[in-house]
Length: 337
Ligand code: DGY
Image (cartoon, rainbow, N blue to C red; front, top):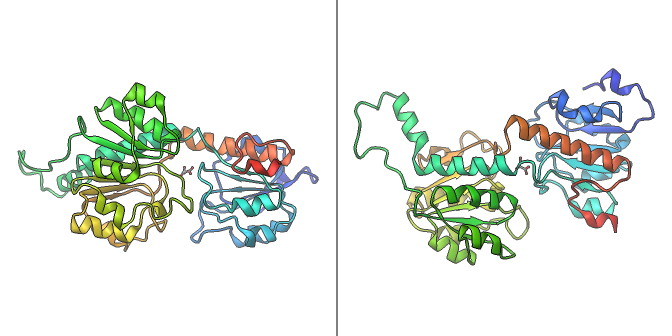
């Protein structure tokens, strides 16, 4: 992981550690503005590769992915750090309080991944509702021997109720898409959203009531102390036996053990997960044994344009932090006060 020569030319430029290798053009905004020390494309364990950790003492900027815990242990090794830029909207991997105490602003990337993530939530909803993975697998395995009137039956969307847990940017984008399918919308949110109630007929409900009424429940809350384990045994038992749970938010919002039991024992009908707890979900995890659980490897924002825009926004946050300017998107704005 050497610093590339052209990036080392300006000896006085600040050193920025980029936790993982990314396509070069995604980091183009940093060219000539800092020295980059870039990690490997993937790391098996979470955190920074040892060669990067060894240079933390010199780093003035840190560009991270959501797999890198930024905590006191890391920050203690980085006394010169002036900005952390996380290439994700979620910042649950970053100890914001620890950064704030040290006066370090933390950048994140809201907005640019809203549409892609909402698209994926709908893709999961449709795939699980219509049992696409099972039907596709059976076709490949030669089990498509005739047109079966009662084979691979799924659930209708039109007239069904979609419960949106968390009506932020992504929840709202999901609501807009869901209206087109004729889904009735209910939602939880700290604040009511009268414009959505008016345009889409969405109804705000307390969580237990939403779980009780919904045919599909889709999660769009950040991972916080309040939302960790939000969907556990009690919540799952409140849902309809025919209901589908979709998670494109963060894995630990759902209790994986309780979900496994719910799917196996029929407390709910099916689940579609783009995020899991733990992540990555090990190949021998019991959830993979269930036909009624579709699991994706955290690809909500994985489109060419979206990931490039996330990286660019992360570069803009990083450069602003290095220049001592307010970050375009700061997750701990109180750092400035
Ligand atoms: C995020 O940005 O927080 C997503 O989970 C990854 O795109």
